[in-house]
Amino acid sequence: MKIAIVYDSGYGHTAKQAQAAADGVNRVDGVEAILLPVAENPAPWDLLQECDAIIFGSPTYNGSLSARLKKFMEDATGPVWTSMKWRNKIAAGFTNSGAMHGDKLNSLIGMALFAAQHSMIWVGLDLFASTNPEDMNRIGGWLGAMAQSDNASPDVTPIKSDLETAAHLGQRVAETTKQFIAGKTA
Ligand SMILES: Cc1cc2nc3c(=O)[nH]c(=O)nc-3n(C[C@H](O)[C@H](O)[C@H](O)COP(=O)(O)O)c2cc1C
Image (cartoon, rainbow, N blue to C red; front, side):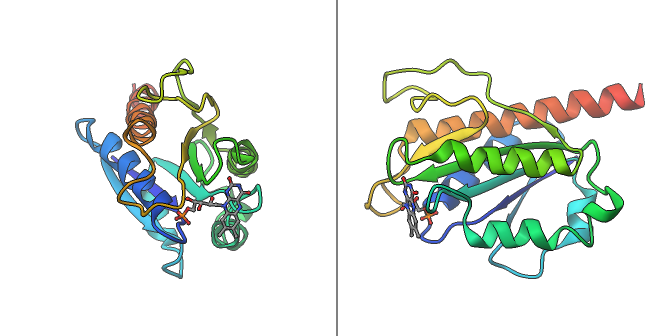
């Protein structure tokens, strides 16, 4: 079973979150994560079709998705949307931004709406929010995984707890997808 992680990252911070989500997917037996940076055009539509789930990731720029992830979404219209090719694939999302809030929720909403328009099935986080910065979901979102990066290098931020949150989401998507596929073939 394959799960794609379609993401953008201008300066490497969201790429760390994408790698963490992939690590979480790979924790689950029989599930393989495929990292697909959208900057590498053209999008591999055939490979995406082979995947049972797609996790979207973007830095929050100007309170929204990056232009490169948005372009990927618009490009999917002809090859995917018109024939509802991703119908009933599992979907999820993560985002990272400079400010603790930074209007990140709007980016996740953009991904969830895109997934809904493609008739995909959205999976959110199953973590309570924590005020301890060392805990998962310290930022306190449920629609997807959030991370905060300051101006430090991607070697330093996002911090461990944010990367663990992304890994947790990846694992949850892998487990949910396995369950869903098993249910369909039973
Ligand atoms: C064009 C641009 C717009 C940004 N807009 C926001 C924003 O709305 N909110 C925020 O918190 N950070 C904003 N940032 C900061 C980035 O989200 C932050 O630096 C992030 O870590 C970049 O991730 P990346 O290295 O994967 O590109 C913006 C950065 C850029 C370059």
